[in-house]
Image (cartoon, rainbow, N blue to C red; front, side, top):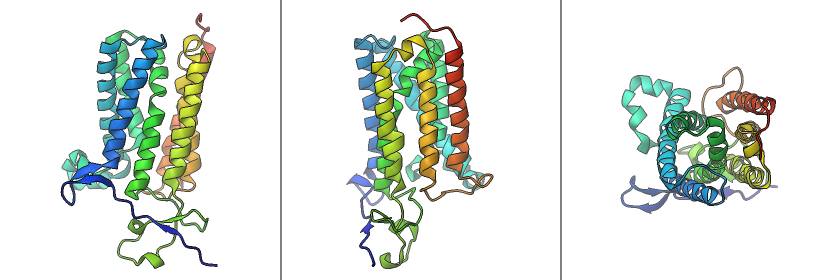
Length: 274
C-alpha cells in the first residue's frame, strides 16, 4: 500500500528581506544557544557551581563563541570541502553560503577553553566540565535548524514517519523522490535532548565536577560520540567515505577515544574534597 509521506516545505528564513537575505533559523539557533549558555553560566555562579564571576563569564563566553564559530567553519571546509577551498580560497570566509562542522566546533571550543583557563587562572578540566554542560542546547537547536533547512537528510526508507526532501533530488517531481529518514531529528533527540538531560542531571545531582574534574566532560564526549555514530547509520553520507566509514563516524571515533582517556585520567587521580 502506498503511503502519503510528508513533503518537506519549511522555509529556512524566519524573516526575509530579499530572496537570499534575512533572519535564518540556523543563525537564530546559534544566537539562542549562546544566550542559553550565558544564562546557565550566571545560574551556576549564583548557586556556587562555577568560579567564573560575571565579568569572567562575558569574556569566557566571547572566547567560546569565537572558538566554536571559527572551528566549526574551518572544520567544515577542511573535512568536507577541501576541493572547493583549493579552487576558491575565499570560500573559507563565505559563511553566508552555510557550512559548519560540529567536530570542528569542538576543536575550536577546546582551544578557547585552553585560553580561558590560562587567562582566568581556572583549572582546565574544571572549566571543561562547566562548558560541557552548555553544549547540548546548541546541539539540539542546531539539528532542529538543519531539519528546517531541509539539509543533512537521512537514508532512503519506507518507515511511516519518513519525509520527502525535494532538495535531495533537485529538479525531480516530488512524486518521484524517495522518502528518507528525518535523521536531523534523530540527532536532535539524542545528541541534543537526551545529552542535555543526562549532563544536567549529572551536574546538579552529583558531586562529580567537584570530586573528579574532567570526568563529566569525558562523559560528554563519549555520549556525544556514541549518539552521533548511532545516528550516522540513518543519515545519508554528505561526503566521501573514509576507510568505508562516513566522516561523522570516523571523526566521532576519535572523540570517543578522547572521552575515554579523559574519564580514565580523572578516575586515576585522587578525588578532591567535596
